[in-house]
Amino acid sequence: MLRALAGLDTPALALHVAGLVREYIDAHPDDGTHAAEYVDLRLEHGPAARALLLPLVTGLLRDRPAPPPVRAALAAVLAGPGSADSRPLRAELLEVLLEFEQTTGRDPDVLEALLRAAARGSERRPEIRTRALVHRTGMLLVRTPEGAARFDRGLVECARDVPGFAALVTRWLADAPEEWAAVVGPSARRTVEALETSRPSVPMPMQAAGREHGSLRPA
Image (cartoon, rainbow, N blue to C red):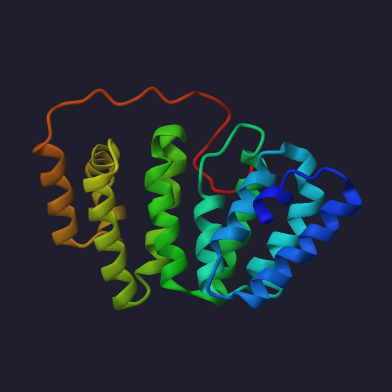
């Protein structure tokens, strides 16, 4: 139902749908899939979606936080590359999520969802932003032993499963070993490097140049 409603552009109806999204989440706290799909589709409406999505999503992420499964599903959407029209608002809302998880949420499921979304979108996002997102997510996860273990495991699995990601991580580790030593454990580092060296050489896809920069805050 929410997928169909995401296409509504009439302001009064769109505001009513935002209320339905909140009601759905309150009734289904373990199901973030449908709400996240709604947000993803609305984001692709570009700047016109900001007036509706900003209060809705900030409410779900910070003001009246949704349960971890919902925040994790939203994390995967907000960390996704999306279209050019959707990227500024994705970045703005992603920063809201990261700040909440840094100070209050601290949920490893949400942060692991961020890591995996960063890896999946790495071919469509400037490398410097992928690097910043992976490193920041790692710094939030390694605050606990469980989080550190999950970051290492997730990083290795993404390096194994996402084409080109092992090469990116290997390059980051080589370029700034001390910076990454605080985030990536020795065993995970060796595994990622082994995954990269064991694969045949494949040219990295060209990434579009633009005004993107390493900060996760909107330019």
